[in-house]
Length: 271
Image (cartoon, rainbow, N blue to C red; front, side):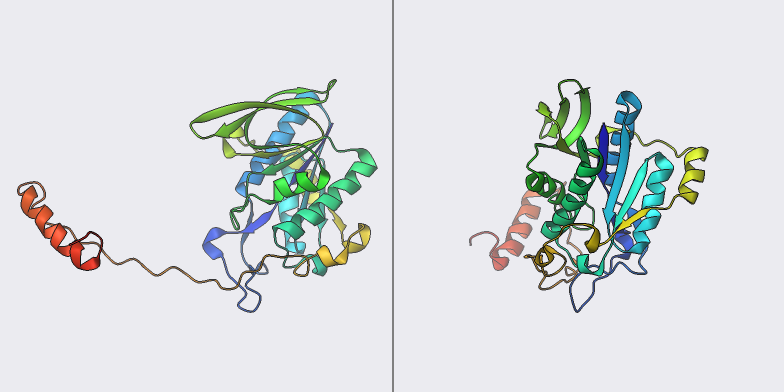
């Protein structure tokens, strides 16, 4: 079994900065963390490896600073880490990002086979939840989203059974693999990195693949391959303080009249 996890390094949400020229996130020099949902995808893959055997590979697309996140993944126990890095990838939206990740997974599939692709349900910087499903669509494989528990993995019959988190409950779903899963935080508790893995991570040399090491259509990369564009970004205006209507407990009728008198001029209720 070969489990491939798509991981993203995201800006710390308290330090988000925007390039005013391109309206894209500024990543250079900004404190970054592993996307929290992706850490749980890594843990899910490691637990599958512990139970069923196999190999875990983590891939991410980004600048050289993402190597730090990949080494952290190695520290958790991941077998192999690959950075997809090229100036041609810069400025990619979810469509262009899923394209590059798909090409990397397809290359891994040719080299050694890929059985399951795991992603966090969404990234905390964009919150679109589009990249995982985009990869599944490009690879033409089934997808199970919002996975909260992996019930069973039948290697002989190539079937996986999971519980998906849905409104007011959970849903039992099954599909054949190769398949793609997106996971929620409820799926597991994170492990601590072992000393052996931390030592291995410190010495580990991540593979780096650029656009020349995969078969790309260049018009599908980066800004050129991104049909969505951010036209403007602004902070919402601050909310003013509210007003407390006196007499709500002792004189409710008077308080209601006062409230109505204030709402009518605002056209909130008819006169």
